Image (tube, rainbow, N blue to C red; front, top):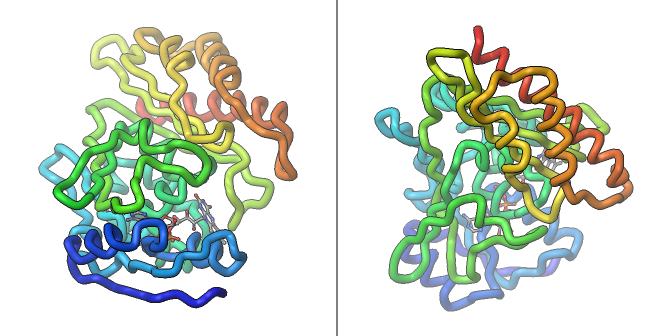
Length: 290
Ligand SMILES: Cc1cc2nc3c(=O)[nH]c(=O)nc-3n(C[C@H](O)[C@H](O)[C@H](O)COP(=O)(O)OP(=O)(O)OC[C@H]3O[C@@H](n4cnc5c(N)ncnc54)[C@H](O)[C@@H]3O)c2cc1C
C-alpha cells in the first residue's frame, strides 16, 4: 500500500479545515472496510487520511422524541442494529444493516461509509431511500441538508464536494401503521454484495385496510440506488391484490437499468427485481396486518 499521512481530528472544525486545505489529496476514513481495501488494491491513493471516528457529532446515535432517528456517520453498523428504537421502529433499516458483511465487518463499518462509498449495491441505500432519509453535510461555514434521493450521483460518486464531510443521517419516524421489508439476492449466503436489492415500504390506511402509500427502492440495478415511482403509484390508494403486486413488480423491472457482468446478466437482474418486489411487498403487507 502506498504511504499516507494520518490525522485523527477531535473536532468537526479541525476535520473541515484539513479537508479544505487538502481537497482531493485527502480521504475520510470511517470504518475503513471499503477504503482500506481500495487502497490495498490501488484503486484509491490518498496522500492523507482523515479519520472521522473521534469527532463527537459523528458518533451520536439518537432517537428524538418519536420524530426522527439521527445516525452519526461514524456509528458502527453493530451499534445501529443493537439500538432498541432501530429494532422496534426501523425494521427495514435493521434488516439491511444486519446482513452487511460479517460481524467483524459490522463492528467497524458504518452506514455513513456505506452511502459515501456510493456502490449501486450498498445495502443500506434502498431502505434509507424508502424512509425519506436526509444526509447532513458539513462544509466550511455551516451544514447543508441533502435528501438521500439526490445524494447519489453515480457509482462511487456522491453530492459531497472534496472539502465536505458527511456528519450524519436523519431518518424521519415511520408513519403509524407502516411496515417495510428489504431483501437482496446474492449468489453466496454471506459476505457477498447484492446482485439485486429491493426495499418495499407500505403505509396502510386506518379504516379500510387500504395501501395509503407505497415506496419501493432498488439497489444494484442502475448506476445509483433508486426509487421507482412508476411502481409505487400503482399501489397507492388500493388493496394489495395479486394483480396489483404483479403490475408493480413489472413496472419496477421496467425502471431497472442493470448491467450484465460476471455476477449476473441484465435480463437475470430484471427477473430478480420482479421476484424481490413481489416478495418484499407481500412481506411488508403481512407484517403490517398482524
Ligand atoms: C468482505 C466485505 C464484505 C462486504 N459486504 C458488504 C455488504 O454485504 N453490503 C454492503 O452494502 N457493503 C458491503 N461491503 C462494503 C463496505 O464494507 C460497506 O460499504 C461499509 O458500510 C463501508 O463503511 P465504512 O465505515 O467501513 O466505510 P469506509 O471504508 O471508511 O469509507 C467508504 C468511503 O466513504 C468515504 N467516507 C466514509 N465516511 C465518510 C464521511 N463521514 N464523510 C465523507 N466521506 C466518507 C470514504 O472516504 C470512502 O471513500 C463489504 C466489504 C467487504 C470488504
